Length: 227
View 1: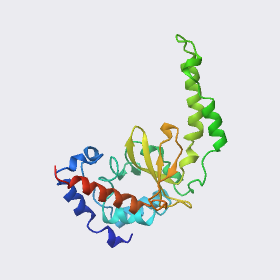
View 2: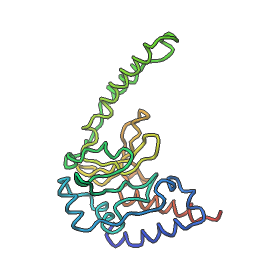
View 3: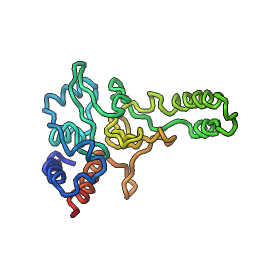
View 4: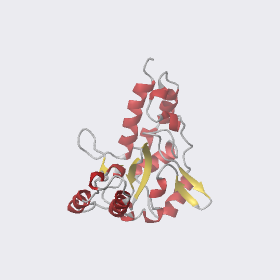
């Protein structure tokens, strides 16, 4: 998507916000249809200098021509803001991204599937423990720690940022570096589902511009529909 193709997005958001069913759009009560001001070119340079990486083209164009975050998929696109300690993304789970490692390539592969299956097979079952015993809680806590050490290892999400949350600890990531740069991935690890790329109806990985504009088109259909 070229810079010019982002033209009119803010106007479309305003129109959807004024629609008779704008409150029916999922997540609208969270982002309230508000879009933050765009970054200036100088601010974008400062952000990219701090992180040591050039952001994907579609996303950096959005930051310059639409806004730094706000109204968007699910509960909204996480805003990037300057704080006392530098630039950072803000939102539920945004801190999961290691901004000092954004230049490292996002890993091509996840954990060994056989390892995951083995761990899942070892998950404690409550019926195997006495009703009045605390052993199950202890065993479950120990298993959770082993599972988290594999699924939520920091190396799993280098080169990526969290850009929105869907509730219930489910989130979506934008890949910043590596062969998947510019694509959006689903994170349902809280439900024991590994990180996976979002795919369009054509089977192609969903990139940032498609991710945002597909949401906006569907949101408009709902917001502008007759009550």
